[in-house]
Amino acid sequence: MSMNKATGIKAKHQRLVLVAIALVALVGAGLLATWALRNQASYFYVPADILANPPEADRAVRLGGMVERDSMKNAADGVTVEFIVTDGKARVPVRFAGIRPALFVEGSGVVAEGHLGSNGTFVADNLLAKHDEKYVPREMQNMTTDEARKAVAQTK
Image (cartoon, rainbow, N blue to C red; front, side):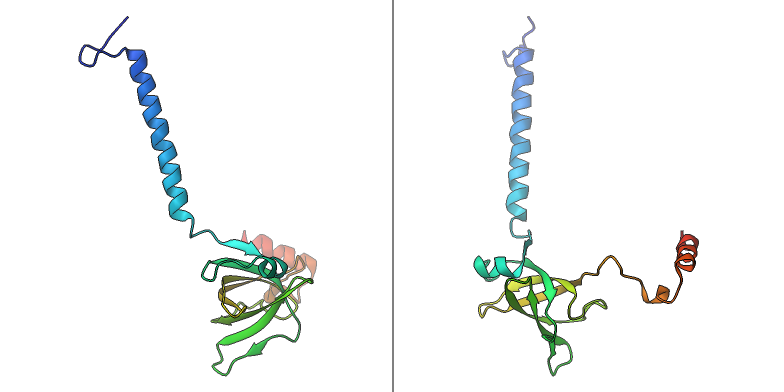
């Protein structure tokens, strides 16, 4: 049996102590990362969820649904837009000030990133417009299927 003369601990026990220290360090690093990122997580809600169980006032969340038809109203400043997001069960008013995505239109899907205001209006910092699977870029709308395939092949 080999024993470290300086510490009086067997080599096998030294390895066990080092493995235990490494495991404690790994768990500690994981807990520290989780604690640091807890406020960075952005939860996803649909209108029915956000009305049934509203998040804290300043918590960053994402609201997803469809932009209700005839609900978009542009403010006088030309930058702010107010609209309603619906999931068919509930409706949530949204206010956004900024540059809107090109695909953002009434009747289309949207994901708004922001927070729920104290008055029940969702204040969006960012809008992500969603499109359906039939989406075609403007440049390719008048092309036939064969022409579109050739154009895509040329870009590869």
